[in-house]
Image 1 (cartoon, rainbow, N blue to C red):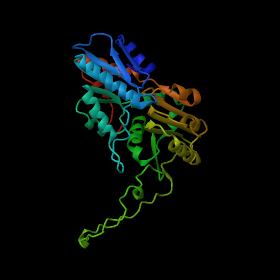
Image 2 (cartoon, rainbow, N blue to C red; image 1 turned 90 degrees about the vertical axis):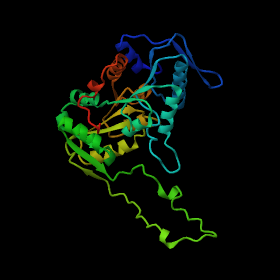
Image 3 (cartoon, one colour; image 1 turned 30 degrees about the vertical axis):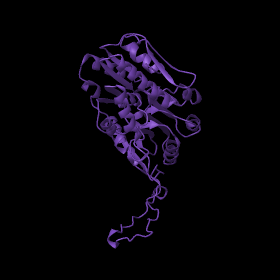
Image 4 (cartoon, rainbow, N blue to C red; image 1 turned 45 degrees about the horizontal axis):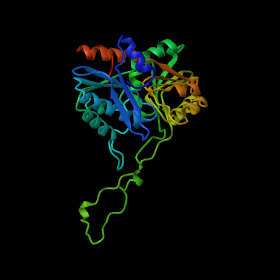
Length: 340
């Protein structure tokens, strides 16, 4: 296994012992993995959290999976609560779909199954040539809202962009709360002028048939920022799957404050909180940021007391137990909707 408290909790709940292995980096920067016991014919679960050094963590996972495959393990199951590179799952300009590349690499290394949580896009499951169990953190976050937010009945669930509206609607329906959507906020869009699609065509020594002229598309203009839904005198709960760069969340909190929300929570599954995120949250109108422990964020919590953690090791350990015993996973998806 790799990673701090969350994997420890998972295997302790199962009453199991950690397998004997050594993972380290040599002085030349190469990763070395040594399996210290026989794994022939066994089911092996590799718990790999993703710390700040993403690429080292990925290489550790690949090398350990390949070492186990070489040692004749029967099944090699990767428990990857936050799947790295999941944001790079769509084609952008002249880039590539890195998430698909990583899925192919994991299969080639020997993984036969993956347990993960709240994939950034559910379609990512189609990148894999083996089964993927995409668990959900929504039951834990909904429970937190009901038990830890005083007077949550006076809350409204907020989507900080139309893209997050389905997830927000799913939360609002199960909590019997109102829904608000922020529209017109600066989105992360493709810069058409920078990717060559508007560069002049090469017409030197060539004739262009007039019938091949494409119609000109009107440039997109962002509408002024509006909040669809009433947040005045309410608690605003912004929901999303990943909190990494927090500028958009901070901007959304300012807008909600202007519209009369008196307390603002941000809730998400994966608290990556990179760079200056803790400081920006501490200085913002956000009252509390609630994330699960899929990603280690102890340092960020020391920098920002507003960050709270929900433990999801229970569902990971139960998923491991059920897969090992060949039991149905349906119980873990009770009342889970497609939009979660």
